[in-house]
Length: 431
Image (cartoon, rainbow, N blue to C red):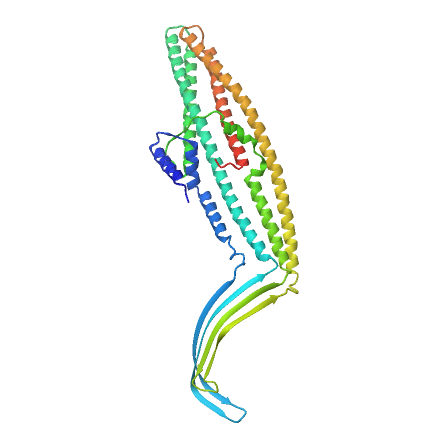
């Protein structure tokens, strides 16, 4: 069942996106995606089917009961000769056979195969749930990374808009100074070139934002043309720090491989159970009546219960059981190797991302300081330009440094976010 609060949040998300006015928190976008993504819906259906199959009856642990009734009418040309010389002849002799039954069959021992089968169904049920978790993790990572890219582009759009405002003022100042004969026309032309470059960069950021937003809208199940804005980038939270504590055993891929190893082990036990005899109990209650219009027996009626036991001992089956056991042993070894390899790969990936995250945090600290100094330098040089105490060359270089610092800072924030998302994915965190 879908949680009511999640449904309300998703409806609110759709409404806010439709108007294209409000900023949408990442958690609301994730809820929307997890409810409408096709892969998640399919994986959820698979998990439900596996849960339905996880039953004792599916494993063969319960008896089967059947009932039936039949009524057969026939006509025959009858000729009977008996040892005492008597002869009965009857053309078109009629006959009617009526019967009813209730039958119970129950396999009570099959070398424990039914118990191994039930545990295998339980493992497959758990496997389907982990597959669903993996799909949810993957879609969450895609959405979170796209959301982070929107945040990066939004920051660059705002920053480039600020630079355009500065460049427009600079162009006006250089135009007045050139017209007054204080500077060469090249200064004015250079300020115009710089302004146009900033405008083009701003338009490129907006174009990339639209493309990213369209892809994200398709991912979360809303119209591609809908426009909305993400929340602003936030600093690291306690959750951001605590997430680094986890280990590889919570990784969904490792869990899945461990379940697959368990399934292989149970399949091997099922194959070995084929060497044991099968014991089945059966019981029935039958009613049978035969009516004939001619012949020696005109009425025959039988009814009553019956019970029995069947023991099936495998003696020779062309080596099928041994081959199944050998295949099962190979598959089990393969699954054990896959688990070991995935543990090593995941541990290396996790440590690499943790180390990368620590380096990115150091870069962020430096870039924040750099952009603060660059901004102050731009403000100082702009004031000097207004007073005619500097030329455009010095300001152009300082502004370029400021622009590059802002791009590096936004890239570092983006890299920190996607690295963090990757760590969450490795550790099995859906949101």
